[in-house]
Image (spheres, rainbow, N blue to C red):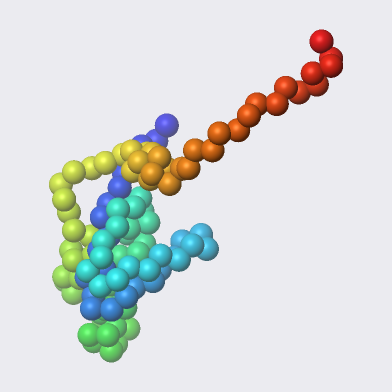
Length: 113
């Protein structure tokens, strides 16, 4: 099975940032960060960087200037030096959110012995 890597995505701007994937929107407050799959973090960073570059320059033609993009990207994708398997993060979150409910087991077709 292919290992999925996790990256930290940070809203480095001074206003809330909302971005979505597969119909699910995620909003981050200014300065808030979140660990997510690396490809999704790259997607979110692209949109945040585009927004901030456009606010700064007011010109969409400048969005592809590598030196300017990189200045913003390093803020949106801070490197902590540690790569983590996404399944570890998911397992922790599932365990936290799972509420155990005791269900009595019903015998199916009791009279068919």
